[in-house]
Length: 83
Image (cartoon, rainbow, N blue to C red):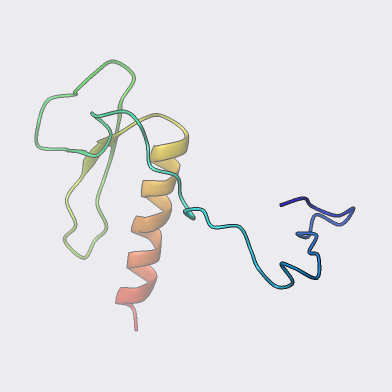
């Protein structure tokens, strides 16, 4: 779908209210991404991200994008654990 000048999805009468179907977070295509952290570094450049304090284990992720998503998810788990 096209976006308008404000960045909103432009809709027509046929598709009014319909949003494109896509995953919120696209799946990484690197087979080593998400490897458990108790294993050796699966490939050069992989980043080990610690699990949250609620007991989630660490994992190896692609640098930048996947590691950032993993850190954000761990932070969200911490917030949820406080309730």
